Image 1 (cartoon, helix red, strand yellow):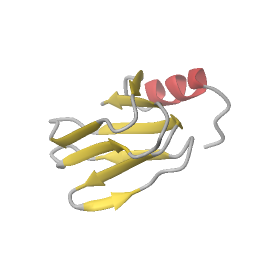
Image 2 (cartoon, one colour):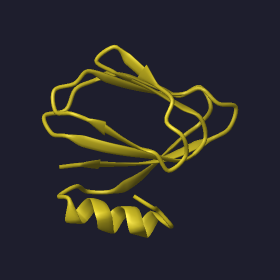
Image 3 (tube, helix red, strand yellow):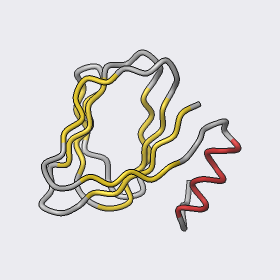
Image 4 (tube, one colour):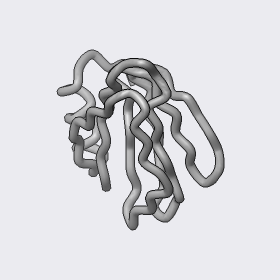
Length: 91
């Protein structure tokens, strides 16, 4: 998907049945071992985030979408030296 703006992402996700909201984390913020009953999409707008999904670690690039299936144990960590901004949505 060629993304041009946060609005484009929101519209695309809505068409796919997902909500879309902005999350902002300071450097060093860690969200550990979450599990949701719904699928989740995340997309990094700026910053350096590390995602761990069922033990698999990834480092998505800016504007790269990451899918987290329902029931997956997942963590998000701001590993950068700056504030991270990312979008998240649930089905």
